[in-house]
Image 1 (tube, rainbow, N blue to C red):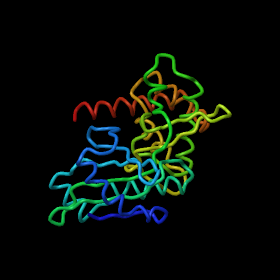
Image 2: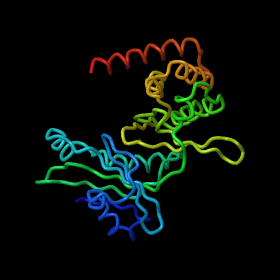
Image 3: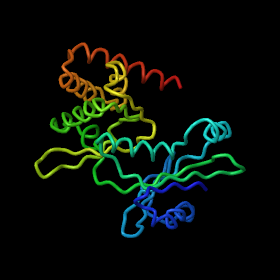
Length: 241
């Protein structure tokens, strides 16, 4: 097992190394169990979220062993990059890579638990969603793009939101391991293709696109038309797959 622990948490290395076995034995509080598994552990009075990625197939074992960084390593390094660019994300603690016969089979990402509610519950899952929160999401997308960040899966479930004492919203971005970074602002087309993943709820999607366009100084009608074309294409491709 390869274990990389952030300098700030070196004193927890032994405890972190035991987390995979503890997950196998059903310890910790299960938070999410689907393609990947996420569990909460209290270690040295810290609430840690441990994400175990789905085991990879034989082709992926070769790819992740010799040619590409694993999702666990990317989750760890990309979290640090988000923070370096002043976009909040759970503080990375460690990542681990499990190998068998020299080949990578699965990985773990450990972070400090972040507060917040999935924005999807407050926007997508209600009939009449709060307009100020929709505006805040659009502003968050503009902010990330202005800092050269294309979140790899910016669906609204990956925006953890908290309300600040002054009534404004604060977002903590999660599930960042598929993100892309660039110097400067991505192209307009790249930004629109990134927005496609926000939601499949059409009225909300168009509203968010128009708000984004307004903040960028773009023509809202033309932007919405192009964004809906991209969403239709994205959904058609997913259906075919």
